[in-house]
Length: 176
Length: 363
Image (cartoon, rainbow over all chains, first blue to last red; front, side, top):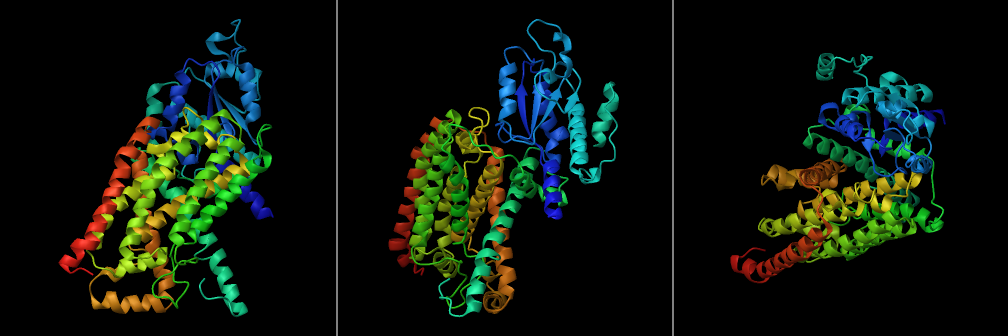
């Protein structure tokens, strides 16, 4: 039984299927999410697959400050996902409201509406930053499931966090 | 399966065939392997890497997806027809596994000449066509049972797609049957392997038609209007989650094995490869060795897998090279190009069989 349990736990870490939800974003972060799935930083390396239906997904990628209009929809779609489910807030707006913080029509952050597991700041976050965030989330999941992080991506040591300067990120990406 | 089990050992051996080697376990492993090949080729065509960190080059990724889906919560929508909703994935998996039993992979019946499938009898081609149509009906039922507008739209589109492409598929499968003069898949394969090389020319057009139509039957990209992610989120699969989705994904992969295997069997000469070399060493000595000893149990599956892998790579290339067609384009293409082309190739085969081959002295 122990072997099966470990296998199922490993499978949960190894195949995160993501679902993308736009909770009032300006479309900047959405483009960057797509860029993270595209050839330069192929997130499918980690088993990430973009699916259309919330029923199939494990991770919801939320972009944008939650507007009052979209809040009930966001909550309903979160309810529709199957357990175990995680939410990642992508972009400054999704983390804290960003430039819209304090406006009359936004909540200011996805965590005001639903529980959030990981935050990826940036306006918009670079694809490298989204990859880094996804990697960190998978590390946290691996910790929770008792899977060794080395199994996640053996040739990765600990990648350096993306720095604000453009040049270093470019070199870091080239090394990957 | 033609010999009726006489001793307990025979019964045990036949159970082993069905459950393990050319049967369920082998087909399932092959299905997960083909999904990995498909995803890798698709990723490489898009200049990506594809699954990388799960096993060797991500070879275990489909297995991990399957286990993850098994471990997830299983949701049934309130308005859905509960029993039908739960039955569809199981029935679909069973049907797709049954379809694969007809493929001749190793020689399970040495009393008949040539490699035989686990299930093989005269007329099983008709049963195969019937079962693959049942899969289509199941897909439509899956969409309607989920009582989701997206699911129903997807189901209606699937029905339209399959009605359009079933006819060229059937005609393309009838052509090898006409050439071999038999309706049993294994017999067709064994007859075609031994017939004259001139038949290769007649099998080219139906092979292309079969590849295109099976791409449509599998609802892969140029024909994936029925689960277009961007418009009707996943079509008929939209409400499925957890174990049911895992079974549906496995059934789809097994249908890929079935399509590639049927193309291999009927058009590419089945599990024979070295036998085609016109040297006595290969065509007689090696053929007898493989047919009579344990060598066949290793050699035939390997050749079968090699040829199916080629077909899978062709199908993945088609998936990566084309964009999704509109519904009207698909229907127009099916009825204006595929059906006349299929009828034309059947006509060519008839003319060749009745007039040209006797004139040229081809047997």
